[in-house]
Length: 204
Length: 260
Picture (tube, rainbow over the protein chains, first blue to last red):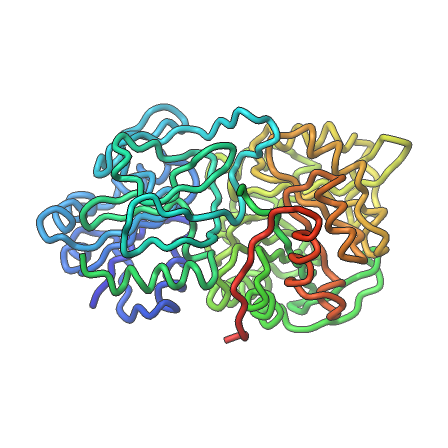
């Protein structure tokens, strides 16, 4: 079973690759063009850093965004976005100006602005994953977060899990065959590896 | 609950081997970095830090190879510091599998290097080192070259500037305390942690588990870094988590396993 790992130069590409293999994936293909994505049976979109840089990197790959959309919408291919890869699912991101996202999960990506000045930003470290909506991939546990912007979902039904950092922060979103996680499963030791195993076995 | 205080073992690496210096001078070999990293991963360390202490005058390829091999077997965040002088140096480490890079001397000579890296790869991956010595009551100065060379730069001003330039985190090391096992410089750590909005890692001088607790409770650190208390088997990561937890500090409860 081929898993397309979208390769637009994201910093966590190799870590996600290593973790997918460790979680049991056999056929992970780095995908930088639409053709590879069209053949994939699962798609993983990594991402770290700024929304805009990731967005521009992703859209610079020939045919990839179109092929991802077709795979998810027409073929129901399971799709996983990680960190900024999750944030790209939103309608728009507000880091360094406003930029369009994929618009697959309605919402926007805004800076974390805690009311309490003692709450540090970036939100950096291990924190709870608290399920909000029952979903086969999401179980309670502790995962590693590293971000200054968060996903504000328009429809609460798309929030699969939350965490708490000076107030609730969306930890996972999803609809249909799409899941996005703010945390880094590739850096969350056994919790993260079992999450990836569940994604690999997921038959939505 | 909120984000957990992180326990970070730090491996000083020279010539591709783990070493731990007392005040950065008297080096004693303590093993292979990748094996040690794997051990800490299995013990449930919250993060790992590699400091390439001889990077300024030796081949960069050695640390890149260590990082790459570590990323293949460890599934926790890894910070790599030592000899990072430019966004290109940072890029090489990030592509090799580092999650964050720590910028040290280069950020003293040219603080803008922090902005260069943050602009290209995001603030979340830039850890700026603040290596300081106490020069008077309530006053600390930045030192370079393993604490041997004074710079005349005020540590608190430097820390605030690094955060403002885009550092996502500050690694605050007391060069007075480093290797002494007398505990962190709590006043230094607290002065910086209270002045910046980004997380601060306390570093330098841990000799007991109580020192870790003090670093958070009195130093206001978001993470505690230590080396020799872990490397020489004095304490496990689980014991560090337990000591913090007993003091009422939120830590995670990792599922630990045998190294694989």
